[in-house]
Image (cartoon, rainbow, N blue to C red; front, side, top):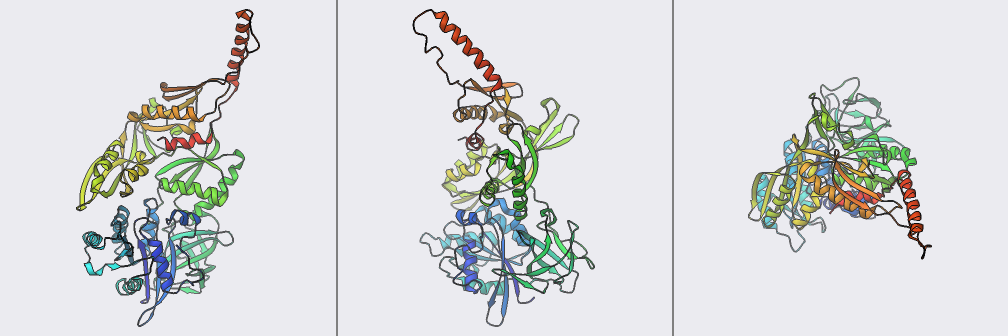
Length: 595
């Protein structure tokens, strides 16, 4: 154990975590020159294309220092705010963390929130200043920010470059000297923390864990504490570039277990593994079921593909513990699923993965958050979908989730950032100048307001400089109404939303005019209406495609023409009763991008 070091890498998105991880693997000889490629640990095409880490990855490296060979277990973590539960579990499996800060951008919001997570778990922090090879690096200013933030000695900050490999040897030496070895007791009852799981078509679910106390041997009979399921450890081992089977793992080791688990509900990230015969006294703290923040319906474009979509969702959930889903049906779209996501990026990623990995064509409805509805009888109902809302006469009030958002930006953009937050019904709580030109503002805001386009707008008004991080704080009463979209008097449930009364009129108007552009013309008039309850607040009409029935009448009496037009009018009326309006898929997507 004294030669084992467990550490993770934490940073804001785009500060070079995966590149530094590549250099560490190269420097320790874990990866051969032939297999070398950019972002080795990001194994999804999507991660490479977007340049973001979506899943945390673990890998074991052997490093020969002056006096001994050390086993270094690295856990690479995502940087985006949507995946913060993954980060917290990875941090719980480590004793030290590399805090990477981009020398050209300085400290950003996600750096701070991940740092606080690491400090809560008493991790040893090693600050690294990355991207030193760039011409626009500002090492002195950024070092000041790091010293202010964590109070370390200025000379303890390592200057490095993931691209060129400069400073990587110093990073490895510091991991060995600064990060303490694991503290567990190999003779105590087994206690291991699951921090990730993946699905393999041939072996079932593979769980990744770190042993806190005790020893695990191949073939042991083990139990997962929170789910209560029992298994035989068919294969255990360490995570090098490929999985490497071992016969025994000791306290402090990071490894994997294969025991033929088929159902995703049986493995939960944050759960504890122990022996059946000699269980540990208590589970490891910090386990929680992930709470989704944003909800949306996902429906197959072709109704016959419902079963394939169900199978695809099950497999995705194995690889992504934070996705939740339950079946639901809609009048307009047929059968589908109501899914819960951690945020909008998470929702986008799931859509992309359904398309790429399972070749599924899906329609996504308007995303919304979960509300608490208090009825007149003082019962509390949780509503994820506007169609699940009781009638207005039974509702006493509706409560919506609020978040505490911290935004770090250059001081030149502070006015614009504040205006944006106030437009989104935010209230300013705090404003702190970190340096002379960097400021952190903290707002209380409704989560529903940031679901649509908040992040995009924030990036555009701050020219990409503002960074944003949030956590849910509480529920507060709000003046919300259900906005329905009617086509010829029929409500389209997939387009209905819960919205603040002050914004309802404007949103309804924009919705109607957008749908007027997108719905193709029929042979009868189509009325598009936005309504709150029975009150219509906006209307657009798509005019009928006229066929000129009087073309053959030239000259003669007006009554001949009138007779033909009356006949056409009856036909149109009948057609309107029978004909139904097809809403194209673009209309559902357009709602998300109303601007």
